[in-house]
Length: 265
Image 1 (cartoon, rainbow, N blue to C red):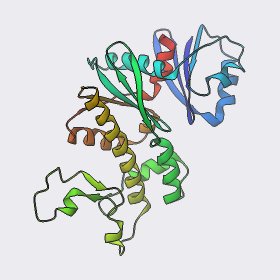
Image 2: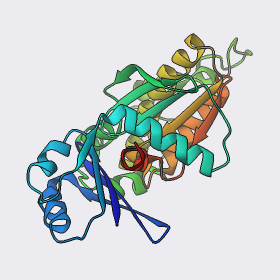
Image 3: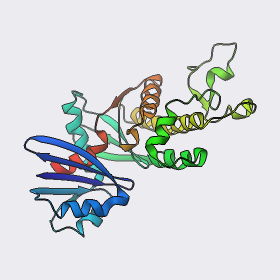
Image 4: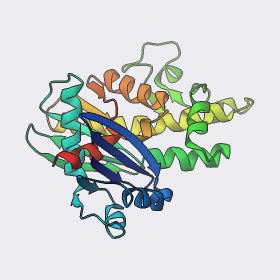
């Protein structure tokens, strides 16, 4: 059995290949000892690691794994997934949306990291908890799907009420900027969480398309574990990317790019 692992700050992503079949699974990083025990009881042909906690795993297992830089691993894995999912693009920006977000430019041969922001799944979970007292990511994102951002976020169309705006009306003028205009409203947890995911998605997208413009590509690829059970985040980044005139790509199993790429480096 061949195993690639991306041991991140929040999740451990695992790719297993056996008998020409591929399997994906995740474990919380807080359960890293469980992963170590599992590895020590498996017959493993190839083991390759990446991510911030790769060294922790390597130090406690009986095997001799190879360890790779996570940026290179993610880029290699993304190349494989893009090809398997029929996306024939050579030059693109990719945003890896994990606990935070890292941005990379792929020129057809190599990746280079071109930026990063602290908005990502960590902000969704942390700010989401402060606004709702919900700690479970799945419960939080499930509730957010039913939220309405209009009473919380100020859109361009809210400012230009009776005239045609000079930019698309659905663009956000100020995240959370509509709150003081609706103090008589009851702000539900669902609405607050939807707006939280909204600001995270829009910050990530704005950064991604700014970089895409700088590197002269229309293609922006989004991967990462923050999209797990989070259709709303996917919709925000895809719709906002299109609204700004760029082409978005959401990659199935993109969160496993690092683990898959490590396996093939």
